[in-house]
Amino acid sequence: MPKNVKTLIMKFGGASVASPDKFSSCAELVAARREEYPRIVIVVSAMRGMTEQLISLAQEVHPAPPRREYDMLVSVGERISISLLAMALAAQGHEAVSFTGSQSGIMTSSHHGEAKILEVRPKRILEALGRRQIAIVAGFQGVSLEREITTLGRGGSDTTAVALGVALRAEKVEFFKDVGGIYTANPKVALDAELISELSHGQALEVVNKTGGQVLHPRALELAARSGLPLHLRPFPPRSGSGTTITSSSTPLSCPLYEK
Ligand code: ASP
Ligand code: MG
Image (cartoon, rainbow, N blue to C red; front, side, top):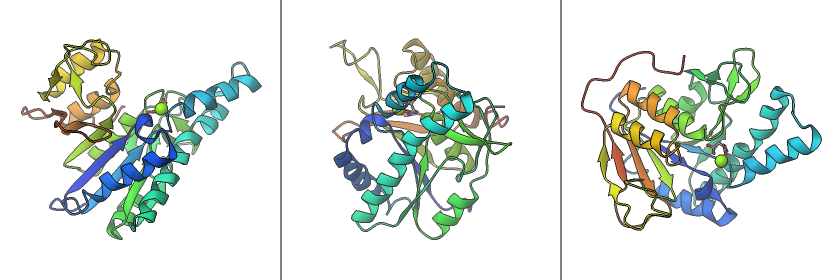
């Protein structure tokens, strides 16, 4: 990837794609960034409630489903989202192409239901970007070295976004959340909660661990910290205020980059 080509990763969580109409709002946000960023990769979660639905479906058939089949089933949620988002972009005249975790080269351990990202081989994503297409990647999933479909554990799409950011040397990863950033307390319950506009990776990790990883998955943050990848948490739907920026001035540890 040539260094001078600006790359942006945009990650949409389940709330951002909770209903069919929301896909076109996401598509508009993406389209608005194309001029500034020639290369855009989107990572998307399953529609809100979809993963829970798939898990209970499995449990209706088997109280403790075989882990391989569990992954085969729950990874479907993100697959629905990527294709719908690609369609929403196409409807607005933008060329986008969706990829599963496996197609994106998200190589993981073989620990079904809780796999770790070992490496990213983004060959097909780079080819799509080279064709000036927007690449849309299914979060939360990958493929083991044995070529089995794996999932990363609940909330794993954040980790997918950061791993791709590292692999593609992105300028930053933008996370679109219903809560538009990191607050001093949970803004849904504490009226005096204040938005923190800037944090270092270490400070953000402290806050995120304290709040049980609700805003951002700690694994994603740890991965970003290791490579010094800047993150930006932004509100969705967009509203005024610039969200929370996470950067570190200190030189990042250069390895290991993934979750080995
Ligand atoms: N859809 C998965 C989950 O609900 C992954 C994610 O949302 O990040 O856990
Ligand atoms: Mg989800």
